[in-house]
Length: 192
Length: 192
DNA sequence: GTCTATAAATGGATAGAC
DNA sequence: GTCTATCCATTTATAGAC
Image 1 (cartoon, chains in turn brown, yellow, orange, purple):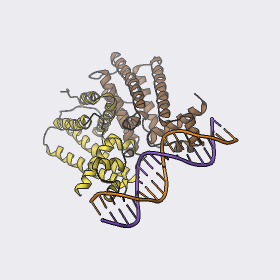
Image 2 (image 1 turned 60 degrees about the vertical axis):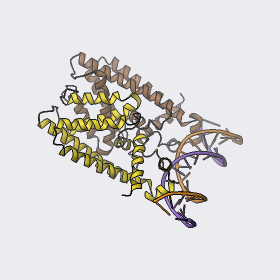
Image 3 (image 1 turned 90 degrees about the horizontal axis):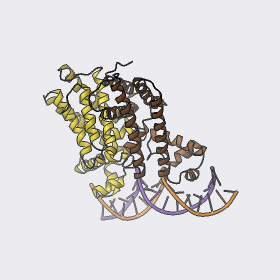
Image 4 (image 1 turned 30 degrees about the vertical axis):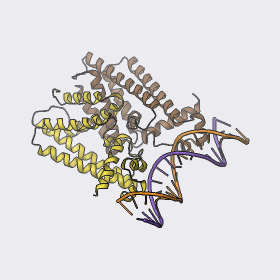
């Protein structure tokens, strides 16, 4: 992957998290990067190509993140803490305008091409598997307590964080902090 | 409000919940309603006008729903059940393609006009107040148990449902059912 | 209230020179 | 790899007849 392509993807990721895939244009990117739209089309002929590369990158990133967690050899509790911190950071960047790119794309599922939907689904599954593992091990180790299946609780947890990030754009970052606090309660943890 | 305006708003609401506010056009509406774009502009000169009327309608609907809950004189538990059922219905309509219009607009917050953001914030607050009341009374009556502030748990619960609806578009309606089940656990309730 | 016609702007995409 | 120029479709919006 060329340097330039990386640059483009970085800005595109930021735009997806702020305005959504359908609502940003090659023109927006060209202004940010200081090159023309035509040049952008050279690197990513169709917007769909850009979207797919973006999702590939997100998948790589998540898988890497997942490996980091597994190798941390830390307690599941510390790992969960790191997971929460990761999401906290998304919205504390800038003026709390960004949301999780996953939820941004989910909201646009009926607008993006099928190929992107397929990749998004894979990305979702990686995320779900990661949190499910985390909760399973947390419960097995006795650090966490909750009822029901780990995978179900994992989806609830992810949904809550993703939703909280959306709410935080109107209502401030406390929404995210409070939601994380409540989520810890649901795992039998004592916040802070 | 004229009959026609109501019709337009109905279809617009559906489009917001499926593709989002920015991604539907007056052309889409004209096809659904069998009238021209120009006629639509007669009723709602600017798209922003349409968006504002839509939000007004959603606010009215929520407030009415809230009154219904309060007058139900039923247990908070039954009221919560009705609340969950309401959201379940959104995504069981059609082929699980619709999401909560609130979350659709939240995802587009940086794209919609400021006037719409303001109204959306009000709508969010009504929703939060409703669920907060519900949980407060549920805990007071001894039917529900949870730690932390009611309003914080309420935001977590709303975020989780909203997020689950988004996930369900890729992963099926079970996601919503499972999330509701886990949310009940977090309230010390025994599902089903 | 609804129509035809049209303006003005935007967005995705391509051709071809450098 | 980047540019200028251009094409075509879409979208918001308006003017004015019926």
